[in-house]
Length: 221
Image (cartoon, rainbow, N blue to C red; front, top):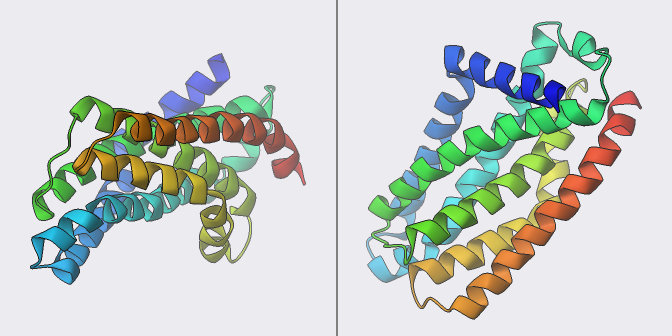
């Protein structure tokens, strides 16, 4: 756990100095929200119906960008091999990277949700439940994209392979996140909301266990 915390804090310090991931993903997510706002406008009813899908599409693509930078930065600086040679189980390196990526994506998710509320003229039924949906959805995205980013970081076509490998896996979390967010933007039904939230939680737990145990074999192959 100390190794995971060290990697987590290292990534946050590097991001605090460079602002590389947040600036790139925030610009991308904002651009997606803006373009889709013009595409669905000026019909406010259509815009409100599409708000949840636009929000999570922006976060899904941004998560791929953020995860790609997480491991690419280590490779470009020549530190990836040294990182993998540290006398610690590789599972903890993955958990540290995934946690840092998830925290950055959570910040991005909060900003993107605010932009979506403004551009699409929507109000969320409960800020607390929206935060819960963002945490569970962003965690699922980060666990998957961080795992596949580590696998593809040394490949020549990593920019193309990362979304191809990640997007089919994140379909359940995207469906659960979009459905949960739709319920928060209108016609809130607690039973339906908690059913979709349980799907997100189950996906996160299963992905965390599978990716953590598979990570050492993936990076060594």
